Image (cartoon, rainbow, N blue to C red):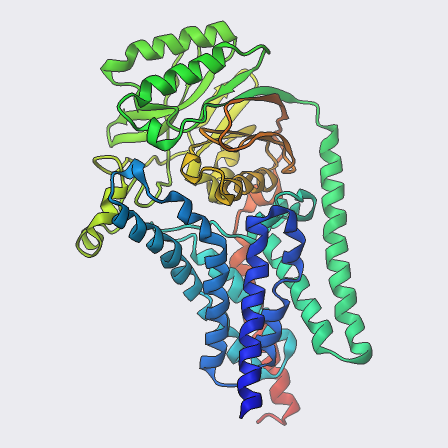
Length: 520
């Protein structure tokens, strides 16, 4: 009896260790290599256990909850949320709900992993159990991207953004495919431990082959882009104005003076100047600010380059969080943010939440929900078309792919990450811009109000960056291209294929099992 309790406690500790090691690369990107074996303890526990269904569900949930809890700890840097005008008590509750609530919600999805593995083990085929684990894990990731509350922040390959050579496969099959590759290496390593004698050689060889093949593919793809000659010279301006200052009564004057001054003092010629999300926190096409537009046009003429800036823009549907391209002779049609931040720009399920958690509606600092856009809205420059993503949108691969599908030659991500100060969240957000570049084969200029502003090439290499809580301008050349990647052409359509493959595999395994048992 004591031995059984010890084994269960040991298994629980192994699952917690797996969750901690798997989450660590999101906080310390230099530890990216952990992802290639950190899931082994979890896989071993799930595969070895032959107990009740609640045991498998329990271990899967334990992993999922702490995996996200260890990743999302940066929610605490939002406290005391002075910028939202809530009390310290409400701020504490909001931060706790954000940290533990999202971890609980996303962690609960891992019950699918426990369920899939439990029933797969009944077929007594280790390979099928592994396939069930892989598919269920990917489905958990995919579900986090659904609904108005979507928050697909955590992806395994995002923890690899400082080692882009290892995630070039995202150009072929996106983040889900890249994550599948990482998980599959973990599975083969688990098989090495579970096997004995010479049987270990096959999974060991497969793990080495898969990792080496991925490494070689990355090296070849990145080497090919060394020959790219078409470039555009861009400047990403970072004002480092914290949220409390930005949204104060004098916030607009400070923002305008800061960004105007940094741009006016540019000492190099550029083709495009990019200001961050709501660099001008006003309704720019309102009658009170027409003179501001004229000043920006004069500034654009002086610098010899158009200015892409974030601002609010009033449209028929309402006021949008938008981007607009301003040149000496023209003010473009705005691009309106398509995917809004829950509780920051809109309140999902407002009728219900206002009754249950009325203080949550106060986080939305605007008097009413922002109007969402419905198209990519490319900007045309002398150097090609720019596809724009505003802040939160950069964590949704389909939005970048849509822009590229409509003809974008390079991408611009404008964001305001000052809420996160200098926590790991700013780098986690940056990692998604790296992934969008790899997936679509497009360079990205990322302009942040406060870190990280960066220039990223089509292979996800960060050419230049300016960290959080710093003021300055990032200037450099980025390649631009019209070539499509496999992912930009087919998107995530491959995800349902995993389900079909698993279903066919299941059928084959059942047929084989019945034949071995004489059709019984």
